[in-house]
Image (cartoon, rainbow over all chains, first blue to last red; front, side, top):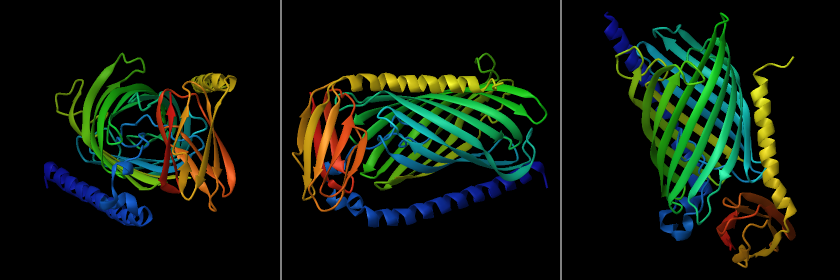
Length: 317
Length: 117
């Protein structure tokens, strides 16, 4: 059996796995949707919608991987399970997930704080430069500090939040190897209300320096720089759908002096508010363009992946 | 000896605390505008209230109903459960001119608005 056929079969198996995961997610969504309809009937009953059905919404999670400017309500607490999956490298089969088990609270009308634990899974086989691996592990912890710098009012549709998120990882995000990794994600999260309570545009700027000490005592310093634009339309009072595009650049230096490649990710997003205290988001991005320095092949699959998906459930209390 | 990686985290925490205090300080120094509301039969009275711009606002919400309500507003970024037959006090930062909606989170049909001028 030729290598190309093996890769093709692996691709089929990988696709089947992803399809199964997607099917499970859809079934869960439909089941939860049923609960939501029972709990929050009027918001799902088309005949009962009028102008007063379209109330203000929290924009933080309506743009998929792009984060909106919302910081919640003073005194509000939230528990979330936020999974991001990354799929597909140049060859072999590659599937890695990282899940945040997150506690989020808003101590003032300007600041939001989050912290939690990270769990990861890696299913890797036959990928050049990566060891084969099939593992699940506790991967580290993180905290996030968000400051609302510019707030939206009925006279100003723009809102801007500055966010800083230090992460400590014991498992490498890409390879699944044991490491000590410190990442300092810094973002600007902005959004604009284009049509009152109906249509929103979101923008992120990202600077993510990190340093990693490997098991062999190597030190790797790198950084990701990027930006995104997203659009989200409220199709019912409780459901928003949209799309987003990300442009990401990777450097082998936190000072951005050693550029190694870039990529563009594009895909749809969805936000569903099941009850006033419970919601989910789903997003999927595919790499539509990319380049690696020193490699003429299309796409950047060294630093990024073919596809990524996000599924997040949140409960406010 | 502290780990060198802890220094930027400490500096960031200090900066965040300082920023929070800077925001809180003017609000504490200014005289707050008081807004009185009552809640009965699943509705706010009055449904529209006013407050001056750039001054902290204190809502005093009297729940006259026989069950609890939750005063909440996404744009004011506040929420408070007010027990039956009792009064809740909600402090809001100085606001820019505009219209800020509020509602009972236990009965979202009950809605009102604060007009800041």
